[in-house]
Image (cartoon, rainbow over all chains, first blue to last red; front, side, top):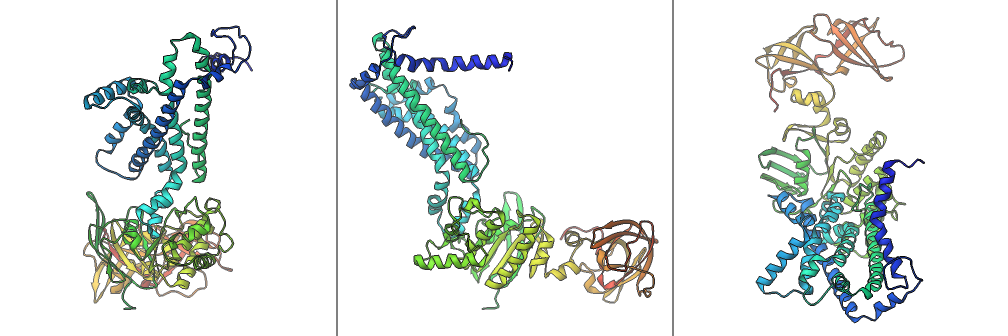
Length: 268
Length: 368
């Protein structure tokens, strides 16, 4: 195989993209406290130190609560919106769906600042619930995108068939619609969970005195001695995120198989 | 009551915004009848079927099912079941779960349900397929599951939306005869939507031919084929030759002067739209014209012409014959038989016909 310029470019691109992430576990297991080569020997000390930091545990708990709540809320909203968008025709549908999807491309810092201003005006203090609100806002478009795929893959006459066979619209949703879009729902929840867990800007603006994990991490950067611990934490987060996304994608593909459909390119 | 129609359609209208999908449909469908809605795509046949099932609200008129006005009655409360074009087999359930789906609220015991499902599967010839996953079925098997699932509820009317269009030719022919057998066996009224005129002729007791939201003709297959009510119907069902004619009224019927054929006497039933005052065309199907061979006695009605095209189908041969004096050739179909040679292109041929097999239409006609 000859090394053509474009192959070289692609290789370089991947290197720049992933080298920093590879450095994360490298220094997480490094004995030295300074983030620099040469490496000084293997240790799991930094992972142990994670266990002895109560503030970190609190931040982790906050992040998990926020991520799980966001996953549930965003997916619930996404479920309704996606079904409406794929099944019904109504006035201004294009505009309404467009505006719901807009946070996908809206700068998060704008969303964060405007949310903060509004919440302050209304008199709600920043905290866990306000972060959930912000995260639901940015995660719902992702959920809609995933679930729209699930719904448009589903033959509309399946729901009609259930009604024709005597079921009410509600029991049809439970017996037919829900089981068939379930893989999409799980995929959506996993992706929303991951996005929320990693999200920094909104969490930073709206966290008040209840930092999430990314916000806590950012705060720790001021202390050079704690850098290896952050590396250890980062390693765990990367593994967790990749794991969740892989499960989400597997769910999406399983849904396609179940419906007996061709894979037309997914979210990942 | 037993002779009262199971379905009465009374001036049914449907608008989608400005679009007039159903234009005053009135018809009565009898108990135990195999009824077909036949027409090209976009003629409103599926809309009408879905209106009967309850999936479309009608804008005007009435649909009576077993004497009861169906206005405001949702699909799950109507005594109809629909076999969808895509079959709509629930992919997450097994065959047994699919067929038994409608029994959920029937109040039957588990054993009774199991017996009913087994009986329904047996009826459609799928007795051994109960445990299969729905996505592991072939097209023909899906079709049967959809039928069993609908028939298990013993509906008063079974609605079928182009149920055979997704099957290959051989499977389709097999399912056609099977559907007819099934319909006779259960005695339920079947309403079939199809765009395939042959399918409609083969299967139906009566056929409603629909164009542009209206019924152009409602008749049994033989009447429909032999006495089409308009040129549009005649062209949609089978093949028909049309030759220009000059018409004069004669008693209850008419005499048509047709270049190539001579004078043709027509009775009133051969002139469905009345004796045309302007230009007229006479219609005759290819199999109603016969090529005479040497030695056959001279016919009462016959004329000479030249073979301009020969198309050999194995069992049949189609000839284009330009009759002397006719403006264009007519198509003639002949069954190939022992001792009956296939004519060559350019050969002279003598045609014979029976004027009773002809119909007369006005030329410049608007669709009914």
